[in-house]
Length: 187
Image 1 (tube, rainbow, N blue to C red):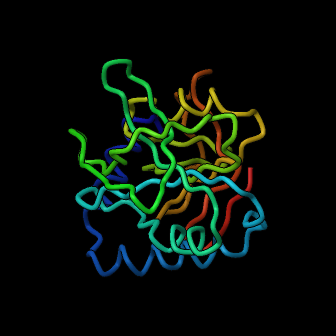
Image 2: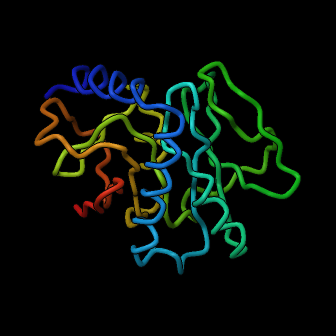
């Protein structure tokens, strides 16, 4: 399957999910995530889901990390440079919605990407080799290349993997894991 075919297929599948189903599946993904031995790190990057696009809700991940006093980083897109920064969440952090309907921190405490140990990554689809399909802007791929090479990259998906995403290229960054409601895929 090609990326553009996967984008269409999984956008359509997500659009058919009720808000109640999104909440239930997101909770199942969180429960699966608790099985991973990843909770001893200090610095994690999360994302706020785009509710209109029915992305996986990460609020349970936030709650467990925040209650454990972990450093939580949220992405913020710089549209002028076509890049993404990681901003440190504090109790004073407020979120604003950007032109892509993404909630981003409004503060400017940019965190060194080399200090992030694990990143939870939104996606539309993935394959059994750990290739992910996002919305096609490449923000995460470019950002991850600024991080340490051993950063853990974990995708969150409502759906099972495709066999193969055919049109991957050298700028695509593979996942280490992808968590679905039923299973954790390791690559």
